[in-house]
Amino acid sequence: MRTAYSVKTVRAAERALMARLPEGALMQRAAAGLAVACGDLLRRNGRVYGSRVVLLVGSGDNGGDALYAGARLARRGAGVRALLTSPGRAHEGGVAALRAAGGLAQDAAQVGTDRIGRVDLVVDGITGIGGRGGLRPDAAALVRAYEATGAPILAVDLPSGVEADTGEVLGDAVRADATVTFGAYKPGLLIDPAADLAGALHLVDIGLGDELPGVPDLEALQYADVAALLPLPGSESDKYRRGVVGIVAGSARYPGAAVLAVGGALRGGAGAVRYVGPGAGAVIARHPETLVHAGPPSKAGRVQAWVVGPGLGDGTDAVSAVADVLDAEVPVLVDADGLRLLDVAVVRSRTAPTVLTPHAGEAAALLGVPREEVEEERLAAVRELAVRYRSTVLLKGSTTLVADGTGRAPVRVNPTGTPWLATAGSGDVLSGLTGSLLAAGLDPRDAASAGAYLHGLAARRASDGGPVSAQDVADAVPAAWRDVRA
Image 1 (spheres, rainbow, N blue to C red):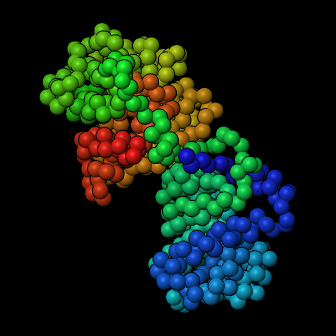
Image 2 (image 1 turned 90 degrees about the horizontal axis):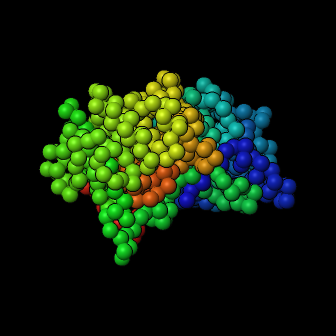
């Protein structure tokens, strides 16, 4: 599992470790790891010896990391030049080390960008994890000039101009091909829009492990974590022991939502799926194993979890169906139209778990804020929603986040998926899949996290670099299960 910690927590851990180490030892550890990563990038397109490396260096400690790493590269025969954006405040020891190794350290403003020449690698050490806001205009111009060379860009700790704790990008920022981060991942490296600028991530262990608290601020599941969560039938299993999930979805206007939600649920591990709604004919035609009922949901038979909302519309029957499901004493997942029709007081007063699965627009409506605010501050939005509604919240998007209603557990960020997943009906598949995991007995936070992971992995498998439909994603879920458990 990948874990991420806030800047405040990382700084405290660094101070505690530095108190036990010789002066400068921590920076040398970081610089050594950074130099290795630089060497790896350079060897992909040639070799270290004779390569040309440009360091963009600010006044922070990550600028010092870049300078010391540059000195190591210079001693291996690379031509290294550091452009100092704040010459009077650059790390003195790092500048001295680079020059002693044969590298150059120059005032970026005096050098200019008219004659850049050949560049094999650009190292971004302008601002570190303590930076706030976007790049200053002069630094932004410098970055754009070196981006135009086409040389790979390696960011030190995180791309300059992004917010380390939130993933926000509040102005100009570096778009890196790779990022080397030290000691622990920072939340902004895992959350869009900043995550999209970080490129491939590489964590350098500098010895912070024992100094970091046991509970991180953010975590991302990996194959082994998801495999441990997925329900597997035993020799004594039957369809009821494996769990029955109820699906309330679809309408005359959106009949396909019922088919897709049921399709996702059938592939989610539960023993049976009950469908309630006007789309029984279409559901049975596509999924004849489904148990159908005319409604209301409370009369449909035993279920261990409900999914309500996909394609439901907003008529009186839809309003009644949502209220009926929320009155049930089993876990309930609310999606799409159900989010518009729910009663906040009812959701907050439920004793059984509730899972809400909004996209940014729906989250904005639930919070009463502009959509742009949610998209720019996704981490804050999902935390606020979860606490306000006393529910587990799965905030869909380019980075899907899962938060629980207590506010105490780490927010989970989903690392799987593809931009092709932004297609009509894919959210209906996710709802059914996650609801099935709920019915199979998973904790709401685990069900939402595992559902998002499998959904994203299925989309990657179905896409293979090209467009997918929601049905393609549903059909690929069993393969995603096998991948995770392989």
